[in-house]
Amino acid sequence: MNSSSRSTGLRGLIATAIFGALASSFCTVSAADPSSASISVKYADLNIASPSGALVLYERIRTAAQSACNYFWFETDADEARCVHNTIAKAVSKINQPALSEVFVAKYKTPVPSPAAQAIEVPARIVAK
Image (cartoon, rainbow, N blue to C red):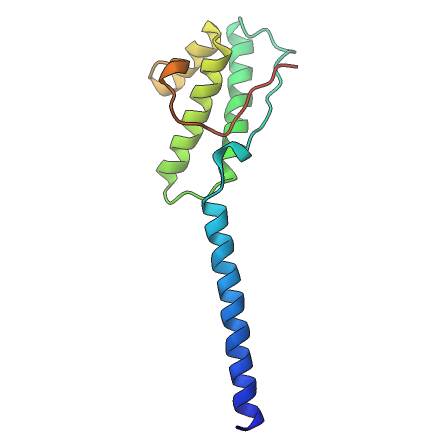
């Protein structure tokens, strides 16, 4: 066996190892735990009972939901949009403020799901400070 064939064999082995490591890292990212991406949204500075305060909070929640859902890889844009929608819905439901619910209904043309109806865990978490 000459040095050229040993070098080619070594390159093949290294390429296989790199490809295997890369493939396993993609599997790890796509199978990430949804609860691992959470973002706190602070709203103690807002009067969320007013329409303007509720709209500001909604935009903060929407921005946080998009950031949290961007943490994951989705097969389609529709899957990512569903993640954002479900995250916003869960946050709005958890806050349970009529003015905020009205903003959600105006944006999505659907009622806010009740907390009991939400079986899917979504990434965003709301914390008032």
